[in-house]
Length: 369
Ligand code: SF4
Image (cartoon, rainbow, N blue to C red; front, side):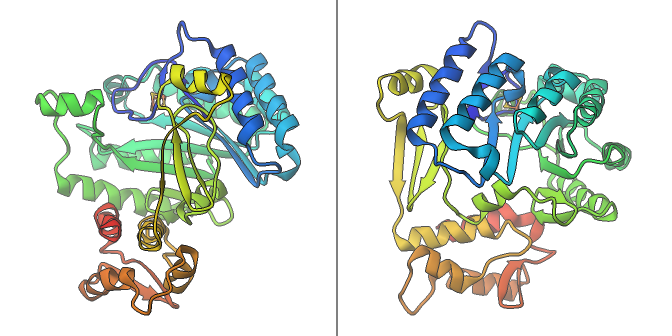
């Protein structure tokens, strides 16, 4: 469920999100519930409130949203994992307690960096101390399953600093960490600044060093790298995202939200006004859709599944994609990568090797070709 409002737009962000000031948040909650009433599956197995910054909503708005979703889907009984994304500036103990009472069991908090200058460069509206305060408030409010979002390899980021900052975050006791290398996504301020020479990306060797350091520190603290950029002690993996990487079915509600249902992928309008207009008129809010053929589905399943440490089961993916021809085109892509040592076969599954792990994006993309 995508709530697009944020305190301010971060300079690196390419999600559909807008500054909340002056926006009709109440009306958006109404429209989200209207769309959910039409499209949300009953008794969902997992629920994820993302965006955007859903924690920016007031307790009254969150109550209306979650009670409304409960009466439509009955998620409080069926969902084994209900997550809400938050940022430090909009999380306190009172809100955490309210969210727990409303059926949210897992909270994600966007720390992003422990360096004040980097937070400023990112356009974040919170300070380092706010992140720690928000974590403690969430725990005092009843959350045990807390994820921390971090970004490494920002301009100026050093392994010396990361060796101090990452353990500092882990000392809080999060149950899950998402740590991504900074990406310069198209149509963001960061990619514009990069093109203008106002920002410099980290050299590849430095990014690799920070990638390996991230994995080593988290492993030393008992966190499995169950996905290239996601880490958790056993049993605390994000089940909602595991379904996504397994190319499973899901229903996205809200502006820009993507759904994958019965082999058809579709995305809602990536702007509030046309999405809301369509929803209020009782029409489809989709801006695009695609239905892949079995070859496309097979490639996509490898592209997503290779991100998982467990890797992929080629036979299971053929069945999922409906691929019945004798030659498996994905295996034809995998063979040279196995020979090069970038992929490895373990118990009949194929996964990224230690050498392939830092090249996950490029390797998995080869399966979409
Ligand atoms: S808070 Fe998150 S969703 Fe909002 S602009 Fe920043 S990165 Fe994007």
